[in-house]
Length: 93
Image (cartoon, rainbow, N blue to C red; front, side, top):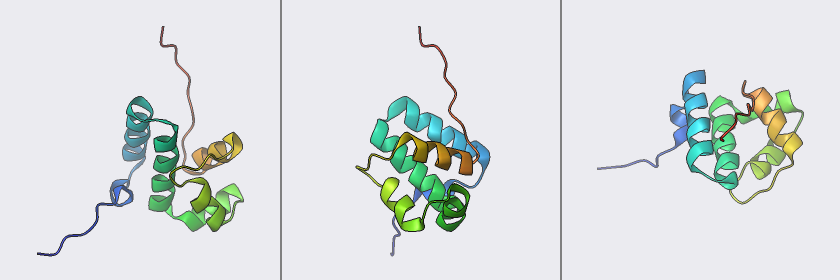
C-alpha cells in the first residue's frame, strides 16, 4: 500500500476553510505556526498569484513564510490582503 504525505494546502479550498484554519492556528498555535499557516494558504492559492498581488518574489515569499522565519509585519499584512483576509482585534478581558 502506498501512502502520500499529508499537505493541508490540499484542503484549503474555500474562504471558510481558510478562515477556520487561521483562527484555529491563532487560538492554539504560536507566531511561527501562524507564519507557516500563511505559507500553506499561499501555496493552496498559488504562490505565483500571491507574489503578483503582494509585489514580492516567489523565493522571498517561500522564505518569509517558512518555519522559523521572522517576516516583517508589512509582509504579513500584504499576504493577508492577497489571500482575502484581515486581522481583527477583540478584547479578551
